[in-house]
Image (tube, rainbow, N blue to C red; front, side, top):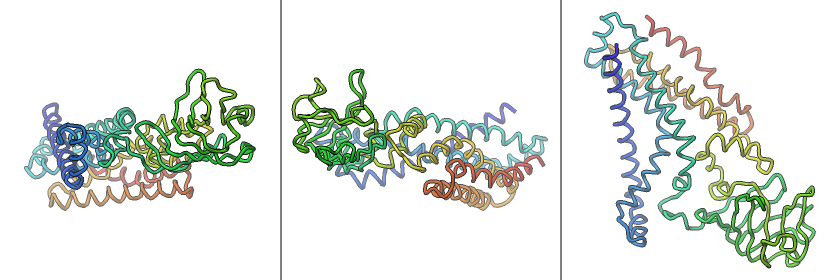
Length: 378
């Protein structure tokens, strides 16, 4: 059995690598040729090889591509491994030797689950470390261009954080415009400046936005800091020795990335970061983030369900048309995936509870998967 398992695992890994490299290469070729002028101009300005720039950019993008495709490619690799055995009559010989279908499927299930957990490690440990690179497009390869800002409320202080544009590389807001709540608007409702620099929390000061060149309200900087429930929200130079004249500080724990990437930031955040943001009183992320957290927790089960829906069909139709068998498997797996996407969309709009939106596809297909798995025992 060890020799058989090693043979099947080698086929599985080869097919997975070929499929992943083929899809990634197709994506790179199509995308790179469409933006070759951006790579060329950036390489010329940096004095570097254009191919080095292209390789670096798509090396980071491949991490995100693996996150999106690993589970589907694992299922496809398992199906093609069974199809390969059936096509060369090897599966018939294995069955004739008295080896059950369950034992034959065991290494494929283990390999697919290993790919699933590798995807989890990539999503939780690697992607959050390189999300700045993943968020860049070919027009901003250095991460220094200004982007559109998506205004967000700090739900702890009710301050609306807005402005003209943001620069992700240096975490700056150009021409910031913060709208203050009635409790903080005694000198004016809108706080504007030339520039705002986001600063992380330090022992002597909280996290927030350092406003440089404050233009309005004109009388604010000479007044005491504005407080809410005895906590400073808008800090002025009269109360902070570290603030020069004409500068202010707005306390906020809102993550800067959310202003630049909007709702897409959660795609590159770890589950730990999402849970921390949900528990933070200054942010209100909505039901879609709660659904995303639950969906990530059940993702390995989701991947296993895809495999349980596909493999039994391949074994039951092993002596028939291989491509028709693969097509039927893909239809069943696609139906399961579409149900999952539909439930997550309903959960994001509040029509379903976040936990139910993540678990409902599994609950709906578990009886079918159990019945199909029983066919492997015959």
